[in-house]
Every structure is written in C-alpha cells, then in structure tokens.
Length: 384
Image 1 (tube, one colour):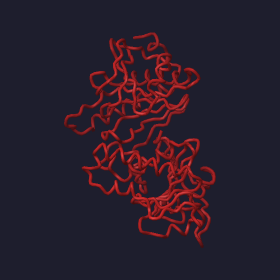
Image 2 (cartoon, helix red, strand yellow):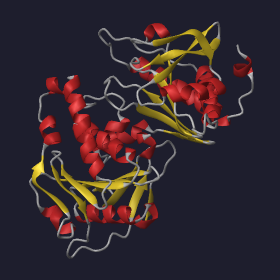
Image 3 (cartoon, one colour):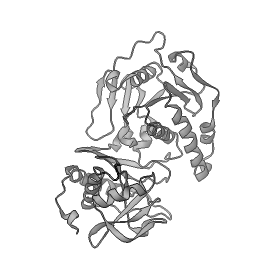
Image 4 (cartoon, helix red, strand yellow):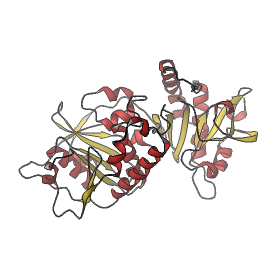
C-alpha cells in the first residue's frame, strides 16, 4: 500500500459513507438481471470507496493554474474498458496527480480509470464507455463530490447514490420512488433500472431538468395537459413569446417507436431539441410545454387564477435518507419563481412546475391529492 493510502484519512465523510456505498453496489449487483453480451462492473469494497473519496476530496480543494479541478473517477480494470486511453506508467491515486490531470479530462463523459495492482490504487488512463453498475465518483466543485453508478441505458443520466458536501453526507433514498404522488420525473431519477429508462416520458423531463440547471441562469418550466386551455387562466396576457403553431420537434421524436428511440441518431436529436427548449427557460418568465412535449410559449408571467386564493403552504421533501416532509410557506423555498410556480400548481392541479435556481437548487412542484396541497420535491441532490 502507498503512504497516501495507509495514512489515517482526514476526511471523515469518506469513512462515514463507505459502508453505505459498498452495500448499495453489492445489493444492485446481486439484483442485476442477466445481461446478454454485457459485463457487470466490479463492486467496490468499503476500503476502496473510502480511499477514492478521500483522494478526490483533497484534490477538489486544490487549484491548477487558477482553476479548481472537475474530474470523474471510474473504478474498473483496464481490460473492462472499451477503447481506453492507457498510460504507459500507472499514476498513483494522489490528490496532487489528480489535480494536474484534471484539465485534460474535465469535459463531460470522460472518466479517469482507477484500479488496484499489488494492493495499491492507481490511475491507469482515461475512458468514455464504462460498464453497467460501475462505481463513479465525480468532483463537481471544491468540496462537493457525487457518488454515482452507471445505469443500463448508456444515454441515461447516471444514478446518484450519495452527495458529499464538506462534512455533510446525503444518501439518496431510493424508496422515495414508491411513495404516493411521486412525479414521473422523480421516479425516473430514483428508479435505478426501469422499463421506461431513457425512452420513457419521465426520463425526458430529467433531460429537460438537467438542461435547465446547466445554463445556470435559473428558470421555470410548466408542463400542462395537451389539448387543454385551462392553464391560460393562470398566465398574464399578453404572453411575450407565444409560439404558434406549437414547436413539435421534441414531441415528434417522442412519437417514434421504441426501436427508433434506441438508435444513437435519435438520442442525439433528442439532446439537441432538449437543449433548445431548456435554453428558453433562461429567458425571464416561464416556458410552457404540454405533457406531449409541444412547446407553447416562453417568457410567460404567472398570475393567480380568477377566484383562486393565494397559496399559503406547501409540503416540502427531499429524497434523501432521514428527510422528513415539512409544511412551509412557499416563499421559504425561494424567491418569485418558487412562489409563482407553487401558485400555478395550486390553481392547475393537473400541471407540473420545474424551477431551477441560479445557485443550483432544483424543485419540482406537483399537486398532491394525498396531502391536499402542493408538494415541493427538492431534487438537486439527484441532478448533480
């Protein structure tokens, strides 16, 4: 073992989360279906998880030529990687080396491969394609790490397992997907492998949410029933940017059969359409689409429907272990965007409102028949 690995870790959260993450990968590996022609990634043990998290945390706090590192580490042997870039000499898993390598691999989809040899963890190269159930650790920003796992669908967003922010550890509660009134978007983020995965409607909302969050300007997306005009009662007129006829590129792609949806060309076309719609949410006001993904308007101002009382309270939850729902005034969740989104769903029970904050927080507002009030689902832990 290297001197770095055998030292007592100074990052307590690494030790705190290691056993939980080990259990997660062992359980999903045991439950994994037989995959024809596809290998499962090796399951990491707690010692490996702790060492990888510890090294990545200290690397995240360093700077290279004024820049903080953004890296992704994938635990797998070189032989399990498809078309890897291999280093002639292995590099120790050390914060200093990781920081110096970061500029070369900071673009999305590139991972540094980590494995053990003679009992010592090392970085063997870089890779894009990794196997199902691969343990991935992503450095998002200084002190912010996300433990992830690759789903079966290559183009799906990786499943988040835990988020570590400084000494705070938040473990994703997968059981939240089975709760009553759980929106499709949240179910897709929480369900590790489902028949809907990439090709499903809920996952398309995930792609839109990721795109909204990525532009960093904050924004609101309202999802209303196709064929209904009731939503107009909660929108101020005139709408600055009404779309006529509706923009149907994403809707047309979603109407294609499942076979077409599994083609790379279809998936790439979806990403382009998603980024177009997601980009519109950066404009002040709300973007409005139907539940069939027809774009109706953007820059819309939300108002209270005639005869409807102001929304006084919402129930707020976050899908992490130990979280308890709390009933709060909507203004406690954020500023104008959050309040107007809560009011819109309060007036339009069959609608959904997605709100991204400039600081990265993300909230999904949906009407809860069980609670008889608006339910605010905080999902930024799942979107990192």
